[in-house]
Length: 398
Ligand code: PLP
Image 1: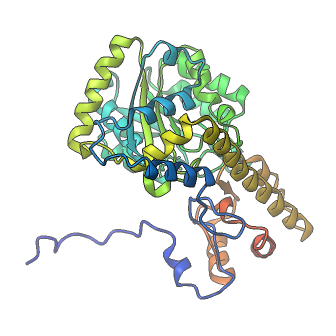
Image 2: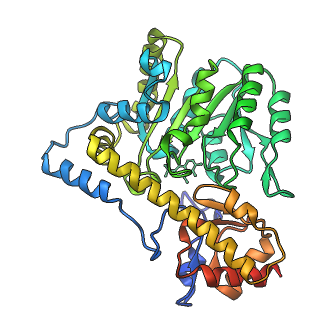
Image 3: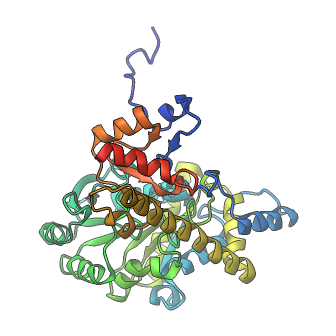
């Protein structure tokens, strides 16, 4: 008998199977969490192509990186996130390691907290949150609890519920915060709300863990999207941070990311850094170099950097335009619903407020595929399909 005879069948992890099986030439895939151009095609940023060419032409060797990755990349990644005026950066007290994109950064963070966090090893994540958060933190050995975030009646932020839950957490709790472009809801706190959230976190002596998977991709401005992280630091909080370059550089499959810890001193940074190395070594020894070299070129070469910032803004702007077009089309059809949340939300995803049954009808009768929770990837909307999409949503919502 096979050693695996008792392995139970797991549920499918991917939502694209039904889409692939549909033969309708006008089918629309709003499930994928990746940017698409206005033709619905994957998009490689011209700055990435140029940086990659530079990397290839420099005929560097393929030796191993150190355990914490390509130093020119991590140094620039920290600068991008925390900003040149950041006190922890100026005082050289940020421990950072390259990671297998954002997911790997979260996993290193989870493992580091599990091993060294002096308080309760429970992390609070928003309801809802990116579906993988729960699994990543659970598998890192942390207990996962929830705090209120989304208000389904307003299709917006449950700000009062969120702050009340932060205040009710035991002192010194670990709290996971989406830095910008909250996934799956697209609902972000305003800057004033972030100020109040930071105050509540500080009051409770909580430990903030920022997940920043969309810096620049939300508003089009990398500084604006880093507001929450930077504000917490100005307030004297010392968060840890997961960064992904999947979306803002379109480096998805290259798996480029970083995990960093803001420390109290340079001496503390050295100790934290030594333990991150001990943690990473048995996981994967050291990270892949190609994508990090590309990102490093983009972040360190002034001309490429300028070009990239423009391209990030173009992506963000296309998404913002598609939101407006979808709303406009729904209104033109005479929809009586208030669709203002489509344009007030930000980032890759929109939470439509559609129910699971309605999402089923969208898929079965209109060949429009997305997740059951009503989340659509705005990146999958184009000037070519937005009208048909609006008609489908209109029919389903009456
Ligand atoms: N965190 C959030 C909130 C995300 O939405 C994603 C990707 O969808 C990630 C982290 C990690 O993505 P990756 O591992 O591709 O960088």
